[in-house]
Amino acid sequence: MKLTQFAAVITLAMSFLILVSCSGTSDLATRTGSKASAYPEWYNAHQTFIADSAGVFSGYATALAGDSAAAVQKAFSHAAAELQAGISGRLESVRKKAADELGNRSGLNTAGFIVTLRNAETHIAGASEKVHADANSNTSYSGYRGFAEAKVSREALMNQLDKAMRRYRTAWSAMKTSQAFAEF
Image 1: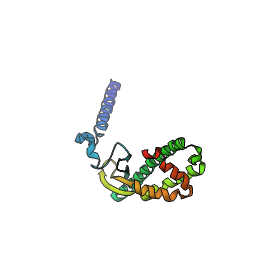
Image 2: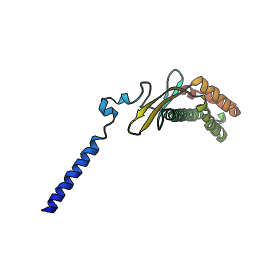
Image 3: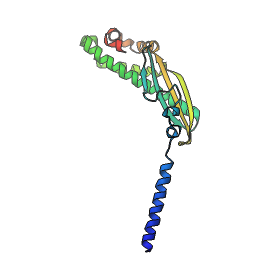
Image 4: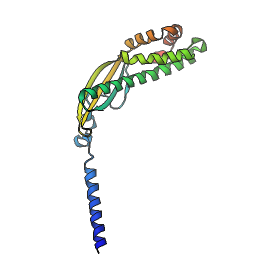
């Protein structure tokens, strides 16, 4: 009989622990009924990179840190990296299409041009600006969640890329005047 009572106590204790552990996992979205309230109004939680029709590129990111200033700074660094990755991907796509359009004589498929273009993309972060930044207290982390948006205009980006690509001016000009570049 004692074994049965012991098994009943263990079962009851396990049930209680499961109930307690499940009740503590609700997050802000569940309590408020809206996931959007967990993010600042300007923050795009669905895409980390956006290129709009006005010629502005934006990168979005969040980061956790012990204090709000560090959270915002980390978030901006990540947003600038997302911006760089998004622009880098678009530039490579345009380069490939332009090379197909213009052929091998354009110089767009040479190793030197490709390496220089990829190195030029590191200048994107320097041209970007912090447009929005915010930090919210994060109770589950015991710190802050920073939110940031980094932007760069097409004009500022092209100025940076023109400087970086001056060694391959002919190939870069060919790429910029190609039909494929219109997509950029």
